[in-house]
Image (cartoon, rainbow, N blue to C red; front, side):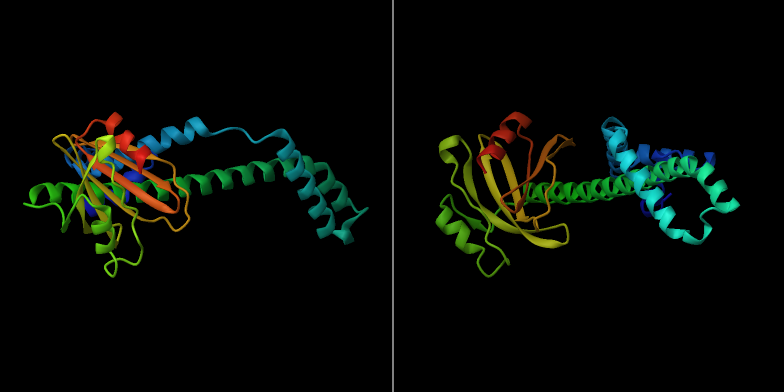
Length: 255
């Protein structure tokens, strides 16, 4: 089974909606493919989060929805008042209202799940991009295009090369030496990549405008590398390194 075929079915696998033969094939592929296995694990993690976050609708909300549905039902059948049909509908209305409320709750749950699934898949794609870019830089003789510890040299270098001005900080006093910067390609766009060094560990910090879309912090450990993703002051940040997570979070707090 190819990866493109498996990825179309991994969400169905997680939801238990695949027939037995396909379930076995997709499970076997995900077990042997690191990329598809990570996608499966991300979806399973999301499913657990949704199950933990799910709460019943407040009684007051159910009452308001029921009252509104009853009002709209009355307005929709003015010609039936007092008739046999009207009496039948009135006798059934509590059950109809309850069914409508349950249906509405289900629709909201499905919409929320779809939104979380889309968001999780997007985060997984970005994390793969930043990890691949960081590893590529480790394979090169020089991980930067502009080599300098001076922010007044690194920051102006991006002018004309990007449609935004990245935040560049000198953190040598806090133990994170600025090595320089480069351009990279993440999430379908050119982004700034700043390189810091902590002892013998190289850290790549990717940053680009977040388009005012708030995002929850993301952390992961993949193939010996720690990844942190967060948003701050209208910018999206991703830091990648083999540095331990605690020290990487120190850098996160400083940026």
